[in-house]
Image 1: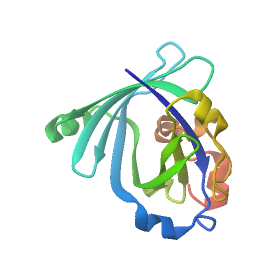
Image 2: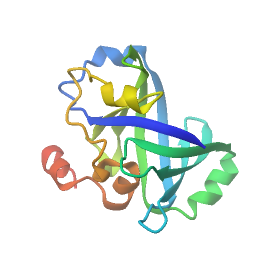
Image 3: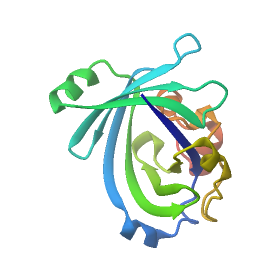
Length: 175
């Protein structure tokens, strides 16, 4: 099981330097949850379609912080994905992910997620790090907005269960 160390930030579409999209790998993501984390069982289980590839992932929160989580991921077949979709809980998340090359402060990539459907208008930048020290020392670019790393409402599992947090619904006019 790998340790995932990442920080997450909101991005306003008006602040984002659009030219960065030209350097990015683009992924069309569809993800669904099979199990949401609870205090008793802190593991989330999800499936994801990424372009023409399919994955099953389990994530378990590390104690004390959302900055670091244990993650185990494996590739599955399209048929396995379709069968597991029948067991999905909550809403299905759809988003475009742009993997923007970024070499700074221990990071190598910014994953810019532009949500679609019922989460339309939400844009989030995630940056993964090799260790907690690099993550804590990260100095985000000027176009990053409010940090939401520790805000559970912006975790994808929460978005699939509850939708946009109330503040974002007001800003973007989403329902």
